[in-house]
Image (cartoon, rainbow, N blue to C red):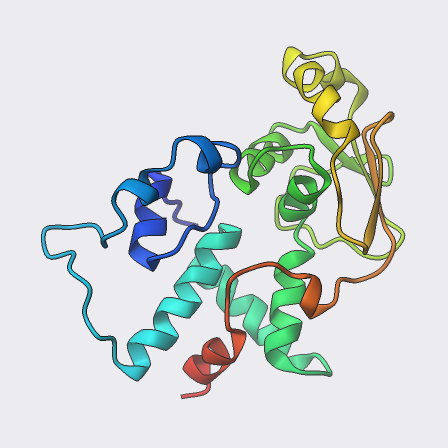
Amino acid sequence: MSRYTGPSCRLCRRESQKLYLKGEKCFTKCTFEKRSTPPGVHGRVRRPSEYGTQLREKQKARRFYGVGERQFRNYFARATRTRGVTGETLMILLERRLDNVVYRAGFAQSRKEARQLIGHGHLEVNGHKVDIPSYLVSPGDVIAVRPRALKSDKFKAMAEGLQGHNVPAWMSLDAQNWKCTILRLPERDEVDAPVDERLIVELYSK
């Protein structure tokens, strides 16, 4: 799968909205606040067409969760096969990704950092190492940082901030033991992605 390796702030500028892709740096050193125009030589704001608006919404969701185009299409196909409202099901599927859960639990400062930690084998689910960021968690799953990783300076520096970290209602956090338990599946109003999923459904329904 292709992976974007350029500046994260460029993506926020392209979507004309802060996506908080760099964690704490988005609150301290944010390029978007100084320069919010779209990137490129011809980066002036134009009035988008109906298709353009739908496309931008899809791209915004992809970039918010760090998902590739083919993978995003697979999530949408799965959402259409699942009983319920397709758009809401799509957003809940994205929210269940392991990299998002690790970020929500406070084990990483951004989803990008969470993917890196997972890829390096620092996380486990139900006592087994999982190095796939797209792994979908289910109710009852216990996500934890592996004991060997806790010895690193990185996690030692994060320990104090984790104590006061607030997690969504669909999960519980044991900050002392660096464990997070999935209590239930998230609901749509608990997903804070700045996305109108109805536009995405309209785009793929054409």
